[in-house]
Amino acid sequence: QVRLVESGGGLVQPGGSLRLACAAPLSIFSVYDMGWHRQAPGKQRELVAEISAAGTTRYGDFVKGRFTISRDDATNTVYLEMNHLKLEDTAVYYCLAEPSAWYDGATYWGNGSLVTVSS
Image (cartoon, rainbow, N blue to C red; front, side):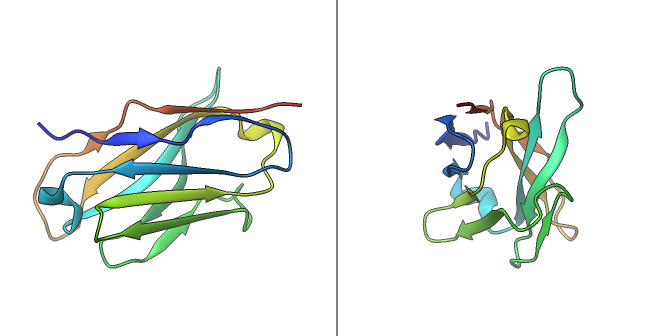
């Protein structure tokens, strides 16, 4: 059973910062691409950021340089640093683990972390 453990959500004012973390099992981290998706009320889930096992990153268009995804292979953790948060960033943020293109495995989702941006 693969479990992704998320942390770091919460309430922040517009313009503020938050860092989300997602810990994955050692057994998959080195061969999985990791990412964050989000879902706001009444909207579809969308890509926020992803980082491949090799370290290549990709971001949703709305990020516009405000967020940074990184991974720490020593602790099997992926981070999402979010700066200059806006009201529209309010959503549940889900950690995602996908097998690398050259690895055969299942896809896993975390339970989600609520991020609320409000004054």
